[in-house]
Image 1 (tube, each protein chain N blue to C red):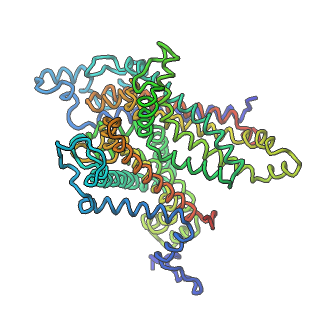
Image 2: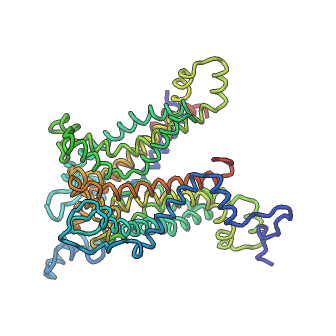
Image 3: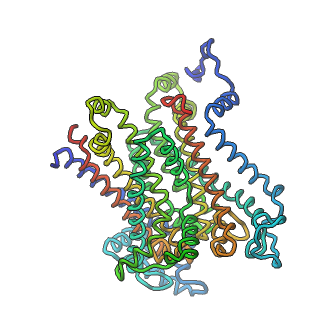
Amino acid sequence: MVTRVKQRMVVARLLQAIPILVLATFIVFCLMQLIPGDVAVTLAGENASVERIAQIRQAYGLDQPFFVQYGQWLWQAAGGDLGTALLSGEPVAQTVARTFPNTLLVAVYATLLSIVIGVPLGILAATRSGSKLDGGIMGAASLGVALPNFWFGMILVLYFALTFKWFPATGFVSPFEDFGQAVWYATLPALALCTNGIAEVARQLRSSLVEIQSSQHVRTLHAKGLSPARILWLHGLKNVSVNLLTVVGLLFNKILAATVVVEAVFAIPGIGSSIVNAVLQGDFPVVQGAVLAMVVTVIVVNLVTDLLCTLLDPRINAS
Amino acid sequence: MTNLTLSEAEPLPHWEEPALPVRLLRWLRRDPRAAVSLAILVIILGTALLAPWIAPHSPTDQNIDLMLAGPSADHWLGTDDLGRDVFSRLIHGGANSLYAALLAVTVALAIGLPLGLIAGFAGGWVDQVISRLIDTFLSFPAIILAVAVTGAMGIGLTNAMFSVGLVFAPQIARLIRARTLVVRQELYVDAARCFGASPARLLIKHVLPNAVQPVIVQSTLLLAVALLAEASLSFLGLGVQPPEVSWGSMIARGYLYMSIVPEQMYAPGLLIMITAVAFNALGESLRSALDPTTQGHG
């Protein structure tokens, strides 16, 4: 049942996303302006004639005032036109559409692994808080947070691909071609990425559960004779789930960013590799378009998590 | 007369606060985690600072007769694909990695502190504008933004870590803004204002010292993140450029030859992890030491 209060909060949150979205596109656009030197000269390449530079300046609208350029770029981007890559001549929107699904598959896979492994560990640590097991899990979690995931990926490649030959070492299959194969290829990258996530989910869940367990209403339930398992399911996890949702939303965004580096280890043709290659080659329309796609995704994920939290949180109705 | 403030008044006679080194020692004895992590960091930082004197070989001297050699008495961790001593490169690389992490956090503080202080202290539309900006920057995926900014500013370790600092700055700004909102309501700030202290003096003498604790904790934690960011960016080829070396670029090189000399890939990664764990542990200990609500935490 969606109450008036919740409706108003949802609308407010949706409105709040608009300035952030606009400002984010503006920052992405400004990135291109940070490049030292004249963009038109860079575009025309070395030894270009003055006429050619002028021609390019006009063709790209670089002779227009700054805000006019931004407006044009935003209008085109909204219509799905992100410009063309300087080197390959491929439309950037096409590059994004080709590479982003691969990245998303790895990121979603790693997020799911983080939850599936992190939640039981967190519950285990919380229910035995203060024990050796709890200490062990939390110790492992502080290692997991500090583990460079691309480095862990290399170790996974060394053992599980090169030594035991259980998984393919590098490469990728598009999820649209063969989903099973795609998941197979995404397994080692997702394992490499999920360590930080497992640690974070387990830590957060443990601390929220421990906090709830020591609260007055749980103590009352104990006194009334409810079994600890029942208290955990009915009162602990239900209260914590909203909290956990926020953590997972933030985690997905973190993992999405970390994929950039892990893609390089596993030679995955994802959006991260296209950004890095474009940066190394100075192909800034690709950088701009791909970064825009990622930023918009992150903003949308944040928005959706916030909205879900608002809808699910039982405390909001009370107020 | 106008400079007289309450905090400058004489302390009560029966309470004398011990000197900083004494308090530090007491803290380290109470909190073994802090002592151990501080010791590890001092060793790693000391080794990095003294790299030219400690390293047994030059990090760039090549020896084509001895390429990809395993560990030996002369080369403790063997030699890389150009016959360079890996152990010496690890020591020199540590200096670059730590410099990179410090640079990123310094940039983050230099941008984030003033922005957050001003937003929290000024309020009104100034706060609105800065807060929106902070929210927007926080919605950028950190590494992606750093990669893109590095691309725009030019590839290299300093530019890369400047970008990372830029990406961290909103976190610092948000933290100090939230604290400033609380602190500026305090009685001693009002009192100082009544005595005619200028806004700049209020901010620097009264608000900043009382709002800065969470920032100290966060900066320590960010050092760990920055270290990992350096490794990532250098691994991608956007950070340190050859012949310079860092732990991140050593991992990248080690990856190419990991089936021949796996220890050359393990060593820099392990050091990154140990240093990051030490920064994190120190940050957590600082958090409980500075937070008055969690007293007596062991």
